[in-house]
Image (cartoon, rainbow, N blue to C red; front, side, top):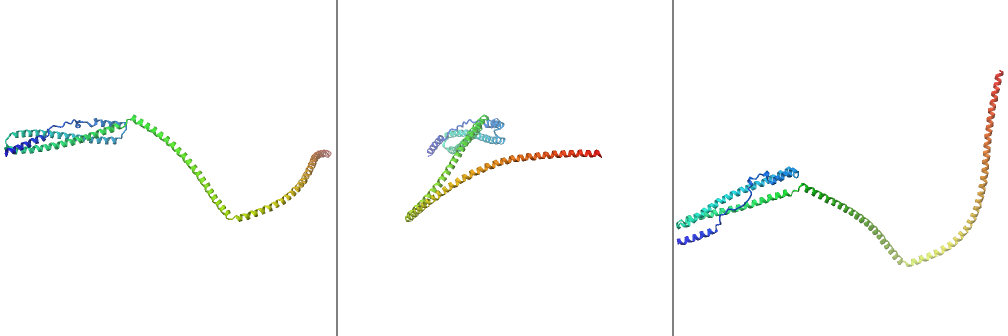
Length: 338
C-alpha cells in the first residue's frame, strides 16, 4: 500500500513539474524616464518655441507643460513599480529554482519524508500563484505604459500639427482668396435673385391685370347672357318696339324734310344778309377812307394852327421887349429932365 501511495505521489509530482512554466525574466526595452530632464524634452522645447513665436499664450503653455509633467510622473512611477515587480519576480524565480532543487532532493529520500514533500509542494504552488499574479501585474503595467507612451506620442503629434508661420500665411492667403470668390459669387447670386424677384413681381402684376380683365369679361358675359335670356323671353315686346321705332323713323323723316325746307329758306335769307353785309362793309370802308382823308387834313390844319400860335407868341414877346425898352428910355428921359 505504501509503495502504491508513493508511486501515485511521484506521478502527481511529475505532472505538476510538467505544468510548472520555466522561470524566465521578461525582456522589455523601455527608456528609463527617471533620468530624463523635462526642460530638454522635445515637447518642452516645442512649447517654448511656440510661446516665443507668439503662437500660444503663456497660460496654454503652462497647462500643456503641467499635463506633460503629470504624464511623465505617471510613466516614472509605472517604471519604478515595474522594476520593483521585476526584482520581485527575479527573487521568486530564484526561490522557485531552489524549491525545485529541494524537491528533486526530496524525491531521493524514503517515503517517511512524504509529509515534507507535501509541504514543499504546497509552498511551490503558493510561489507559482504569486509568480502568475506578478506576471499579470507586469502585463497590466506594460499595457498602462504602452497607453501612456501612445498618449505621449499623440501629444507630440498634436504639437507637430501646429502650423508654421509660412504655412499660416499661405493658408490665410488661400482663405482670403476663397472668401473673395465666395463674396463675388454671393453678390452675383444676389443680383440674380433680385432680377428674378423683379421678373416675378412684373409677372405677378401682369397676372393680376389679366385676372381682373378675365373677371370683367366673365361679368360682361354674365350680363350678356342675362340680356339674351331677357330678350328671348320677350320677343313680342321687341316687335312692338320695332314698330314704334319705324313709326318714329317715318315721323323723323317727315320732320327732316320740313327742316330741310326751312334750312333752304334760311340759307337763302342768309345769302341775302351776306350780300347786304358786304355792301355795308364796302360803305364802311369808303366812310373810313373819307374819315382818314379828313383826319389827315385836320392834322395839317392843326400843325398850321400850332405854327401860328407859336408865331403869335413870338410877336408878343418881341412887342413886350420893345415896350420895356421904350419904357426904360422914357424913364431915362424923365430922370434927365428932372
